[in-house]
Image 1: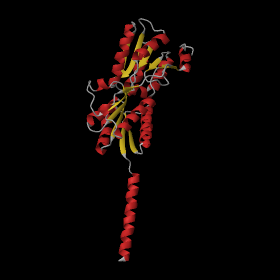
Image 2: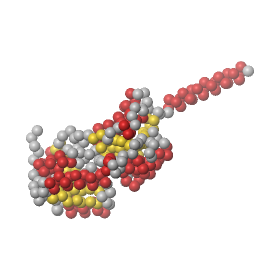
Image 3: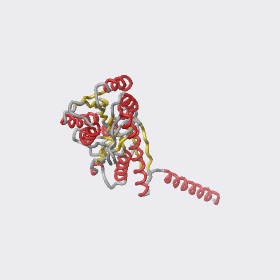
Image 4: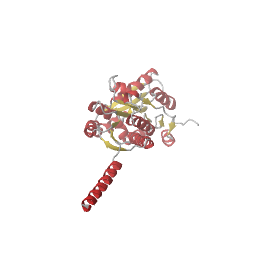
Length: 309
């Protein structure tokens, strides 16, 4: 009998230890991140999100498992999102518009936060789902256009090319915004759109530099992923490039901090997971650029005068 009791006690202790270990090893929340593609701006937003979310939950004594997946192209966002809904994650972060639309179409119950998305109202036709909120990378397009006019000495009749991927709806929004402002100053705006990078982009840029005095690139993920090609051709032909997202090919930047954009999204996620807010309670947040930053080396190469500090 003593042996039986001893065996039962040993099993009970072992079972209790295993349960305690399992409890300790489990995380409180699971979050899926769908990032459209890899490039500097989106990478920074994702990192900011992860850093903020883990820090905020740590303060509350909670842990989180984060599954980050890069779709690679818009059509694959749904595949990534479907793996998250199948796992019934606690929250989905969608980095870029195609990821956000895929998430919103896949679930109406799992909270969804977007980042690196320009216009939520336009994306959802003015009817943002109740389980969706996030941060916007929209910038003051009129300020960007005015900066180009002033720093490049653009005058009536000059042609500004706007380069963007036809598959990105947010790029069209930005094109229309800067077009309206430039045309109010009698500056000609010409759209250069493409769908396939491999067969169209390089030849399109080569054509663009023969017809334009300057180039504006919206917050277009496809261009950003290939901006080395754009920058090389434009610089070789002495054509200045201004991008809405900044980057090395941009002669002057008036852009937001994408790490901070993701960080603010991560703080929103923590509020939702901890139950203090629902997505419908959170207004879409926009960040303001911190100021104009000139790429002095590129400006010198292009013959652009940098204002004195």
